Length: 197
Image 1 (cartoon, rainbow, N blue to C red):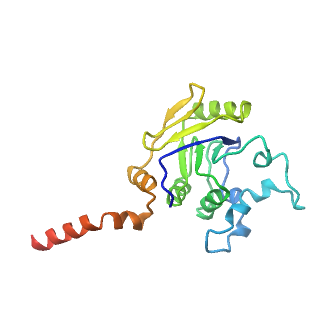
Image 2: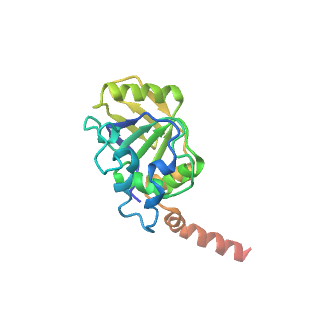
Image 3: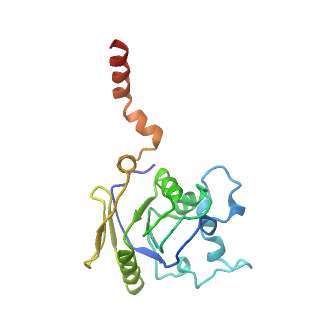
């Protein structure tokens, strides 16, 4: 995974609550066993009409908005536990998702794939969505080391929580195996001391 310490980016406001994983990546695209190409099918049934034409009213198709941050409504990633939802979001280019609540499995899948789910208060989420809608060029600053998210040229700022282990992994670009390998010498020393005791 890529190392993640800080991100400055514009954002896309997806002001929809209870977005489930089937809406993020419809079930008919789950046949593949690797991550390649999933970004093409992100929100497929919302981005396109049934006849294949682009749905110009959907926010991801609005040229006014762009960036590596998706600011979504409450309860993002609910529904089935498919890891493909995180694959699709990362494949599309998102590095951070902002919401006031996530399903636990979606949150874990996101962190395991280098996608940072920032959980904020409902008040902060409402304010940040309103700001982005009014000013699409708003820059959000996500600082993982200090666990803060803020909007530049505004007073909007908030602290967010993250599991310390997952924070370490994201900052160093580790998956679970990389983390174990980074501690290999300590593990060997522990085993040696245990054997000698």
